[in-house]
Amino acid sequence: MYGYANGLVYRRPEPDPTAAMRILDQKVGDVNGDHVPDRIFLAGSKSPDSPFIQHITLLIQDGRTGRSRPIPLQQNAGYNPTLALADFTGDGVEDILIRIDSGGSGAFTYDYVFSYVNNQPRKLFDAMEYNEQYKYDVQYLDGYKAQVRSLIPQRTYIIDLTYKGREYLSEIYDANGKLKEPIRGDVNPLSGLYPADMERDGQYELMALQRITGRYNADGLGYVMNILKWNGSRFIPYQQWVWITGKD
Image (tube, rainbow, N blue to C red):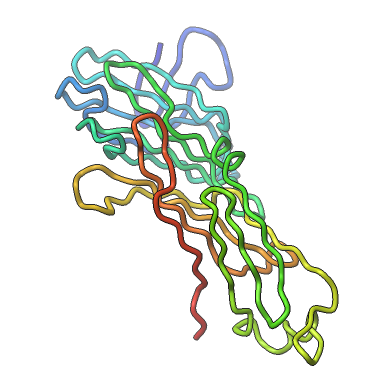
């Protein structure tokens, strides 16, 4: 049983370190489809001397009955957890987007989308499952270029590396632009997931960002951006780009 008071979420009756959890974010919207606004919370516990948050839990309070339901998250610890409400499936009912920063050097995120139509939780998106399904191959080419190959969908991109500067290039290329040795890069797990109504029809897509790295993780080459659209049973990429940041 959950209760709310003074910015805290209380769970009774068991004595448990998660029994008093702070509200981290909250939104109001109709997520069960009964046309009555519900209250949606992210709650978790953290120590007073650290921004790291544990036991992050999604809580939904039915606006009609006042009853609350906790929904556990597989990855339930991290930094800066936030909520967003948007209709991703096109059924006219808002879905719940959860984003949690991992805090690691890779700057990846734990992201979830839940539907709660008819008070039945249904996971529509899980970042860990997404990372397992969508793979990439990155390798350096002669002529100061890097090739990024997406396996799903099957697309190939070429990045001009000359913007990295002469010192960088001289470490890996000879005077004729030939690689001194083979070099492979990588594409990090999901590092950003954002709602975007690309077609302005009220049904939101997911904009998924993944960082492309070169010889080491701090050697950023750009980003893969997938626009994911709900097809009735799952999110699939229907647009994909590779982009690099500009130089001053």
